[in-house]
Image (cartoon, rainbow, N blue to C red; front, side):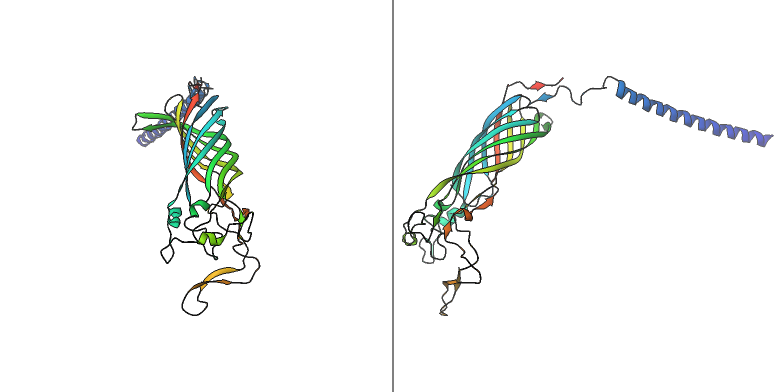
Length: 326
């Protein structure tokens, strides 16, 4: 009888524990279902992800000055002064135009070549081995190309927006955008010439340059180009912002004004041809046809350049009060 009672009590205790566990599980499931019902049927049902959102771009016209500088300049620094105008159809799509006028200054490389001298410590001059690529130290700065202006129509897409905080006190609205477009680029480039021509499009007389005379002429070239990049805007109040852009505008030009084209053929090397211990420029003819260089300054000497630039600007938005969502 005693064993039967002990076994009965233990069995009932286990049943009671199992029942308690089942009730707790059921209550938890009921609470989970209840929470889902509140989320789906409560006051937040159908509510937008963001309320009272300030739409800094939608149906607003923006305009402002832009200041830029081209990167990786070999021969000329390019300081860009311009303006940007844009109309934003929505808060994420804008259509606009940007234009720049460029001021130029020689780089350290150009100044170094312009100050170069020969073994006799006199100003370096061209020779038959490097003519017409090199016009001499006195004329080198005049033969290199200069970027003068850029006019681009573009479309901007704005996929990112938010707020940025500094020291937990200064808060600014920000957005990130990408842009792509096309237009025209204007640059000055060494005038095309042929060293074998005596008149018309000739490269002038080598003897004139060797005697300290001669002149180099540049011509204005207008070419189509595409432009694309990324940008960032910070809005310090409801209508004034600061933008930062990284822009690329690839096109072909002869940046150095040198003779770069021609096929493998007659070339010049430094060699002791006479065996007297003195090195001289010697013309030799390896296998192949054509001449390199070909003795001409023309379109064939142009190479691709991405013309990268960094741009900082101020944008003013109108109307001055942005739209606000419900």
